Image (tube, rainbow, N blue to C red; front, top):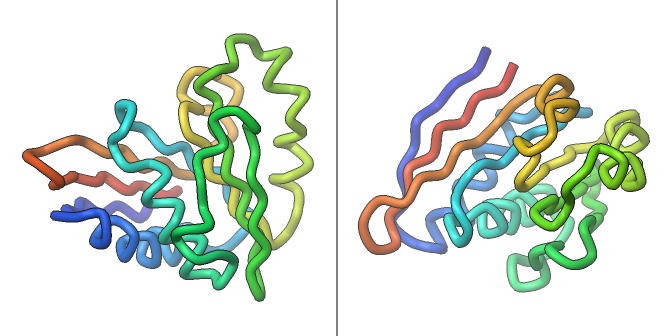
Length: 145
């Protein structure tokens, strides 16, 4: 198991942290759960992951709250960013095709609110817990297995 405790003091710091988290996620494929309150910085971290794989600039990465899934193709890796906040049942989850995403050999599947679904927790190979501190400071517990 790889495990790191980290802190950031700004949005830019959280974006920069995305590269380290991406490196910890390797080798692909990997499904990772992002945990944290609304506004904790989950999507901001994904901006950094997308930038680090040369898939998208941070300003082009948005929360998939209403679309549920965003896909970003990098030079060597593909990033799937999911937000399950609005889903309530395992049946709704099945319609997204997460198993197909996970099966791609170059896929990093990053899921916000995935802890709502036991089936995802069982398949996850990592998680990142984000906690508010003061102001723009955030604490991150990154674990990959």
